[in-house]
Image (cartoon, rainbow, N blue to C red; front, side, top):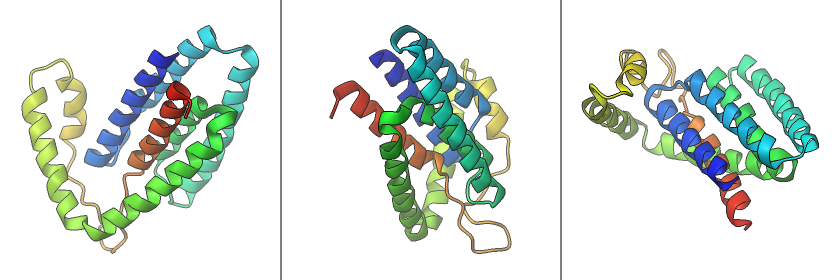
Length: 184
């Protein structure tokens, strides 16, 4: 099951990177996270644990879409939070939400402190990835997002800051992976 947790962590990091660069989380990443969970859980978990994880995930999806409705979370963040809740299960769910919240608070402080520099860093990373991935097998996937207009981390016409909460969710995912693999 450790291999599945490592794949899950890598996919969560990909979601965090896309959220950082484009303020969007591709649906395919959320689908892959769910598929990897079901592949691993069918092999390693009893049926009751799978149902329990699905119930926690469904509850998380419901609450996170309520947060989306009041414009606290983005839709991609809501979906990512729900599929990552599958991996936390009942034993680590509260820890996952707690670590995600702490990471989100730290992310907010960081973005408030360095908002202008973050946009410059995002643009440099985007240009670097454009050069690296060009003509590779990932180019077609990346190009869909690379062609979007560059979005600043501030809402147009307001001083409201936009946070890529996928980074905070990734922090929670990495914590769950660490605990599941090394049992800390």
